[in-house]
Length: 265
Length: 281
Image (cartoon, rainbow over all chains, first blue to last red; front, side, top):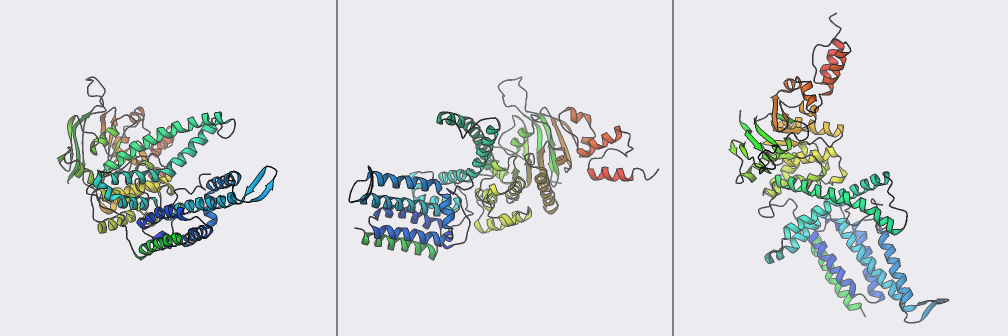
């Protein structure tokens, strides 16, 4: 179960998308999330879907892998689609089976919302799949730098994020281990009524929290001994480089926004 | 010989407000010269960890003084001292700060403001020194315990420290991992003449040391070469330490009436003695 999850996972590679600067990728994805909402007809939706597929192609991440990894999201997607089909009652009736009626507008809305959802999930997954967590944090740190003037602890936030990300796999492994240990003691997490199953989670969470705190303490000691004392006077090992790829991707973004505004109804 | 570190009558208690409370460290003195490998051994609660914390400035002694490079360790020179000490901790996972191997090695360098070009060079050379240079972009959860500890060593030596401290660095590793780490430290010492202080309750690790400090109940019970310390034999067992495997074997052989030339600390010596023991008869 845990191996297939691709949220926040990074697949190393050497594609065009991989080699983009995290800053341009972040700007791109956040702007993309906003302009997706400009789409409101078949042409514009087809356009953003096609563009997303193009980005996936450029990132050299296999579509099958992406879909397989996003299975839980796909289930949610099918669910939203069904809700739209069932509850939107506008336009002509396309299909009728007893009291179950599918309206034209319902189908349209269902498809549009699903595309929007899919495209957003794909784009953000591509961001995390092609950018190592540490570069994302670096990017965020640099982009948020102006907020330092407002006394925002930008460096500290970025470091917290990178450490949190770095510990996800470690804590996942640990959860797995504790789960097995509790199962060996006869706790059953997968059967019985919901109430029992929720109760069985408690002996899972308590040891996990205890060990997480222990880890945090150890890590703090290790960091202190290795000379960490805040962002002042620190140099960076990771250097960010903005090149033609990044400039061109921002141009693509602008062009895309123009196209969407032009074709939307 | 230059002195790297010394403890002069150091005492520390975790509850100083209670006058009769047991002190974690009591009146300990010792010193480490440049290029030496010192092992501090003792069972749990013997005060070894407290001593390490006083070296790295996480705790300050209540009595006595800790000197690093002849300077008394104080709040003022704390960070300078830390940049001269490389430390490897017990849990391989909980000291890995960076997201990848090279980021982690660079962490201490970043903290100390080493310029970028110099940093890249140092990261690469120190990873070569621990033979982890093929793993530059690996993430910690794809590495074995021994590999993670080697990365931690690389991170420590990247600062070119005067002293490398191994704080139970092999206790959570499997036998292969332990061998890997100890071999790395030995090779490093041959190459760079690094001074090593290792805290351990693994006697096989302590055998590599030039001198052993045997701690019991917060006090220095004995100090000497491995041969001298393990000659204490049953005393060590009494204080909760095991003898090296070869020594235990020797004892068992002798109790079964096999004639052996004496005490053997390493397996090789024991084997040599065994197959030559009947030559002169």
